[in-house]
Each structure stands twice: as C-alpha cells, then as structure tokens.
Image 1 (cartoon, rainbow, N blue to C red):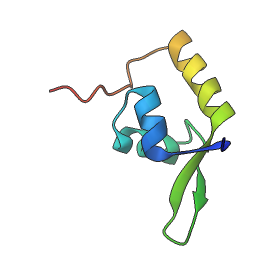
Image 2 (image 1 turned 90 degrees about the vertical axis):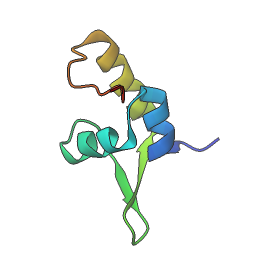
Image 3 (image 1 turned 60 degrees about the vertical axis):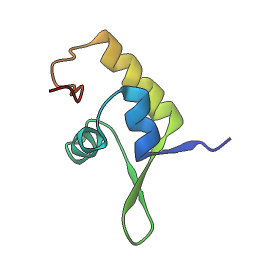
Length: 68
C-alpha cells in the first residue's frame, strides 16, 4: 500500500472539495508534495492522519462542506 495519497483521495477523506484542499495546501495548512512536471500533488498518509486529528479537535469554521 502506498504511503502517498492523491488530492482526490484526501479530499474525500476530509469531506472537502478538492479546491479547498488545494487552498489549504497553498496556505500551508497541510503539506503537499509536488510530483510530475504538471505539479500534481500527493500527500503523506501519516501527515493526513495528523491533520485530520487536529481538525477533529479544533475549529471547523474554515472547512467547506460543498453544500449550497
């Protein structure tokens, strides 16, 4: 099993839109590793788990649910 997750996989795990995850990555809230010349993002599984634990114990006001 790979230690790295795709942007879509992490967005699904966190229940956020992929654009929200991109913004969080750009803002430095969660670390993404750029791969390929296109700049595709990958996330380390253990860092995502830590981020999720912090999210669950902290403020959720910045989280987008995608609802209208």
